[in-house]
Amino acid sequence: MADGKALLYTEPKPKPAIFAAGQQSVTNGPLRLLVTWPNGEGIAGIDFTIGFDSGPPMTDYTQYYGWTMPPNEKRIPRWIELAEPIHGVASPRFAIDIGKGNALNFVLTPNDLGIVDFDGTAVERIGGRLVMHQRRGDLSFVRRGK
Image 1 (cartoon, one colour):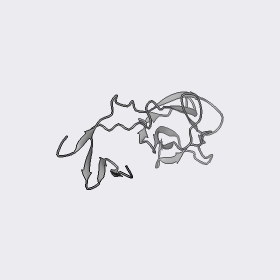
Image 2 (cartoon, one colour):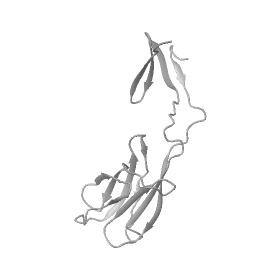
Image 3 (cartoon, helix red, strand yellow):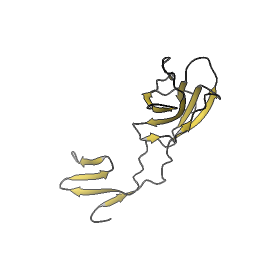
Image 4 (cartoon, one colour):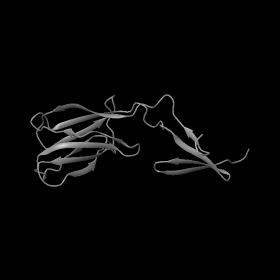
């Protein structure tokens, strides 16, 4: 207890999800991107930002079958960052070397994805509610029935 608030902790501490670079290969055509689970199944809805040798970055998101750069894009891609926005998972910046491959694969290992790490989250009783104070805002809980 701290200042009349209970502090919550998750034990054992959840292991965060991680993005890792997978295989890349050389193909004819523009840059291709595929993000998969460890079993090879494609993931839709992965946000990404690609940085180029010049000009502003490009942002988009994947489908389960991947993503292909528009054929009219002639700049050279230099790096990519990935994010799974629902659970707040973000990758480090990965370098892109087109000479080594233009078909890129990244793997999202979920580990304990979806398990909340309370890590000292405060809860307190306010009137007839239990209020959990989180980074994204407060959550209120009300007892219903007996």
